[in-house]
Length: 351
Image (cartoon, rainbow, N blue to C red):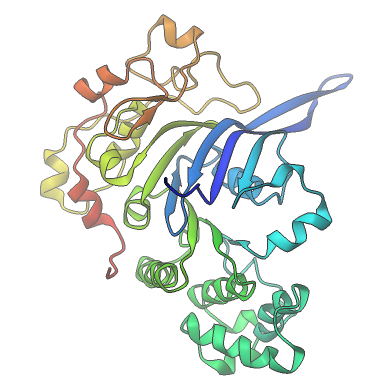
């Protein structure tokens, strides 16, 4: 008998009502940010969530933590149904589910010292007696590779990479088992990215953490993840183990993402056969009927414009939402996929 997943998301929907501007009246429209996605995450594992900007990745992360209440769907964490719990009932669970934000500087209150920022979760969740809180803050700073004298300094005195380490320490102060990492290195220089990724990997091994790793960079996702989910316009279009997905992507959109990855070696780059994905991402205010990718897909047929494909098993541990996934694998309309090229393009760190 296998252990149940730490996190189970079933049919997650997140819609926002917005007001559109009309000539005489203001109409009400709906943004389909996330539209019925499902996935699981095992303990001590990392699920990478990848896709273009605006596809719903960050909204998914916030909804999973119930920072925003989903419109529909069920979220089960460690056997408990979160969407059925009230605010007071969630308090005890919240410390086990934390987030590291994309903007390392903007996510820190500039009026608080580093010590105050990291001490706050200790106080809110009553984790450490007041007379031991400074000692615990210093332990957390050392854990993320910062000097203990940072306690009395302010966020503006640190670089972006150091601020991200502070954000990670603040998240760890609550003693979580699950972290949502919302593009944690996208705002950092490549050399600093490698250091933060190494830190996150070491912390996962040391503390037994589970990660939902949100990013748009396939090279980074490939280094960090055990499984990868590919999102497009509010939908998961492909879900598979990392090695299987990177060796043989099944969905045309996933293939398009791989073909768009720049390769630093001009010899390799010139030898690649790639096609640029055409068109624009449709508006989430009015997503197209049928398959949402059909307006940009070279394999699209009439069925794709009418019938929405469901996420279905496709062998090799894959689940794919495409009527013609087998044809996509056979023809690879966006060009050859070279996983080794991704490794060359990634911010390197040890394992």
